[in-house]
Amino acid sequence: MAFGRAGSVSLASQLFGRDPAASLALLRACWPHAVGKEIARRTEILAVRGRTLLVRVPDPGWQKVLHRMEPAILAGLRSLAAELAPVRLGFSQGVVADTPAVARPTPHPAPGALPAEVKAAATAIDDDELRARFLSAAALYLETRRHHA
Image (cartoon, rainbow, N blue to C red):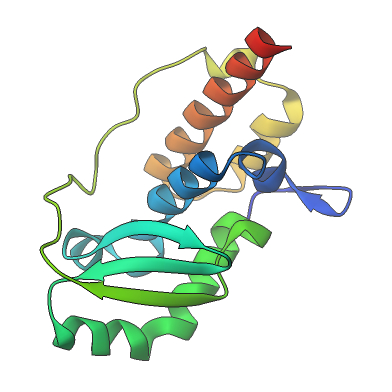
């Protein structure tokens, strides 16, 4: 289910890798699919520091649970975000922001206007919500890039 590769760099890296904010947004979108909606609802992605994804957890118990799950979580993120995935998790304890885990993306330029390579990569994403987020983010990125070119 990883975003398709073009040469040696993944499509995820091509679309989201140049901008740290875009990379973080991609990881936030992938998080519920890597950990499940219940865990995603009880955690919050804060930042990426180097190759470490900083996650806020409500208490030491949740930190322990996620620490035990770290290899599976990292593998899930890697399957979705390719080389943009972190190699380790870091934790911060505190009040987790009440963010909807299943927010629908705001529609942007129609996916029909996307390059065939992007649409082909999207077909490999099994989850309907993640596929829609990917297409929306790719369309927004490409539209923004056109305006800045």
